Length: 258
Ligand code: NAP
Image (tube, rainbow, N blue to C red; front, side, top):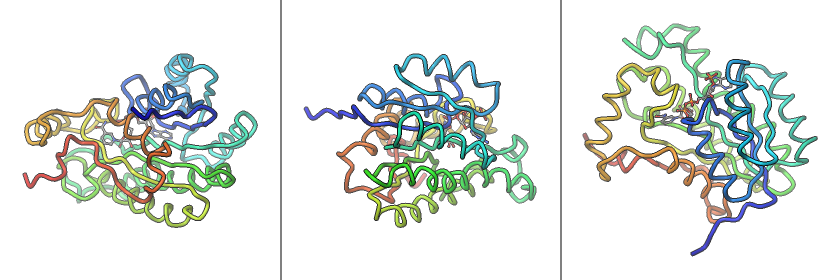
């Protein structure tokens, strides 16, 4: 069997809130393959969680970063440059919308709710890829962002987050085009429902997960570790010819007509 060896590689994983986070599953998969990992957390509330999880991965680095702050993003990449000297992989596993925007009528989305959701969940990929690109330019790299099928289909209550995911996926394609000449690949994983902290903030999440389980070809929900494995693949040389794609890790749900 061909194994994936990422010794000597470095990753920035953004979006670990706790051990259920998809970002943690990705970080674990990368670390098992020998990759060094840097983490960011947003706000002091999560500092302890992320620091204690990161301690399980030797040589990891933990930094604060709210992606709504240009200064904090700059700070992360200058620390990375000092600590690792380069970056091979960026994992964007960040999304946010105000709770009131994730229930009820989409047409009642407020201007401010739209702005915040699109800023945190989609613009951040552009801003981070620009900074990461400068640390990847010499050797190339891989950027992976997390999305949901709400980008192209209607899931009641997903509302403005669906718009944000559509923007995220298109931004990823555009970034793949621009960064390709530097041998930097940009891909998206569209994951099926997994009960994480932010997923539980979506009204009717359990109904959504049950529907997926019932109608997905594999007849089950996915595990976070399956997202981790797919991200590991996309970062590895096994995916060297893949960029600008959206890879569904959803037990096949996206092919169904009902
Ligand atoms: P999660 O554990 O709650 O992770 C979301 C992360 O985004 C949290 O660490 C959160 O920090 C962070 N975040 C929010 N606003 C931020 C900001 N301004 N700056 C920096 N970080 C910020 O939930 P998750 O399900 O693993 O979500 C990860 C990604 O997977 C998201 O893009 C999500 O849309 C996507 N996804 C999830 C599912 C699912 O069913 N779970 C399915 C498909 C795609 P705070 O806790 O401080 O807000």
